[in-house]
Image 1 (cartoon, rainbow, N blue to C red):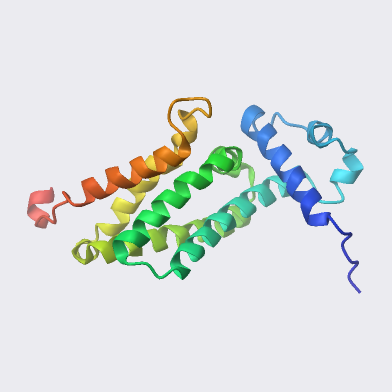
Image 2 (image 1 turned 180 degrees about the vertical axis):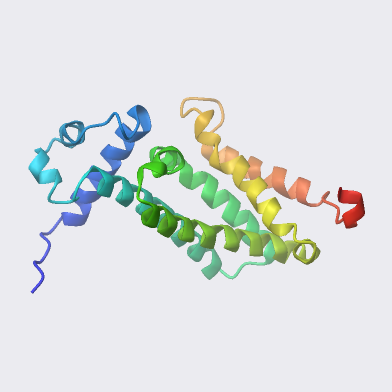
Length: 205
């Protein structure tokens, strides 16, 4: 029979993951020790190992929690059954705002996932592909002709290029908040999306 988890197990594990994400984002995965993680959590190292197998498992859990949180966000927006324009705007704005509370996790996913085993990286990549596919379908729903021209996915990747790297320059104490940025990205993408032209292949070479 599987041992029951103590009350508060999930909360404590989430706190460990958050502390480790801060350290990995600041110092890098390789330069961070499990002793540092335990100290940051105010726990003993044996207690940390009650929640994770090793440092690589800790990294895997951070990345897994982050990508599934993004997938949950996609599902939450989808459940609202909005019109195409409103649906795509909601996705853009919710994602941009979500990064405000997950900058460490996103930096770790972007920079440190290379330290995971190939099978684990592929599993995470599969979730990321599902997220990208939902965005691409949302773009195609706004302008169906872009899907026929096979442009909806490249445009989606350009969109993620705007969103995914904000952690490299957007400062929490700066003039621009994540809330304001979310609206700015949405307006910029929609303003540009309307100007995209479907050209003949010969003209695109």
